[in-house]
Length: 276
Image 1 (cartoon, rainbow, N blue to C red):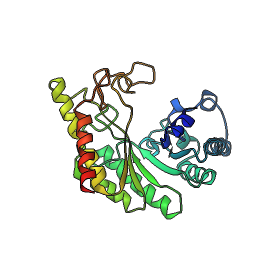
Image 2: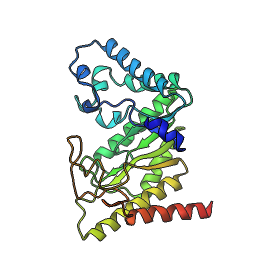
Image 3: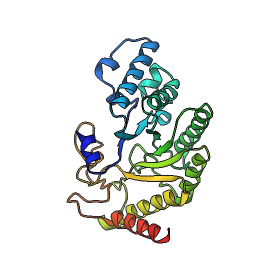
Image 4: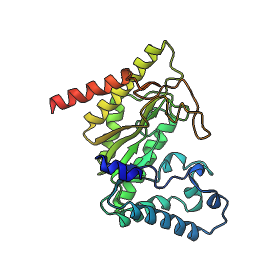
């Protein structure tokens, strides 16, 4: 129903995430199951083929093997890596492409927008080498997705610099993929100052990252992970939420009023369209 509503109203639908190794995204019967590797491969294949085939021609973009690189070093962090091994990435992309050859397939991850500390360097370098190898083997990866949950407690606490992000995007672009910013938000929980000062700091990051996307010439999508601070996955209190009430990560406040970040994005887009 959601997909049909979106299409009726002229939206392009991106589905996140078709394959994700986080155990909270895996049903209990599978987490507790005692299957062989070949059985896990068949289970994953059936899932990918069934879901993509069902939405063929309606869902135009799929996020696949989400966070496979960032989670790979830690056993128990990526279910499919543990049960199948790194081959699950290639298999998932190939199965999805077979089910819908016209769909855009995204290799999405976090902390991969620029190398600025040990973990971001590891992720950027490992993801680059993985995409390079898979593309050379004909794996149908169309897009590298950069989540950009900036300053979240799970993310680097060093804000990315615009030129470094441009350089990283272009580096991936040289492999023959586009780049999307897929889940953008900025957690200002740890930023000092008044509310207005924190929001201005946030607006500068929104501005810089959107400009990086546009100036890179390979980044063609900038999506925020939600609309209002009242409904963000970072501020909400449900079990699956980060539950940081003052994170204020999005462009609209809790009453859906536009914040400085909204005007920063608006102005960048206006200048971009004026100069095209």
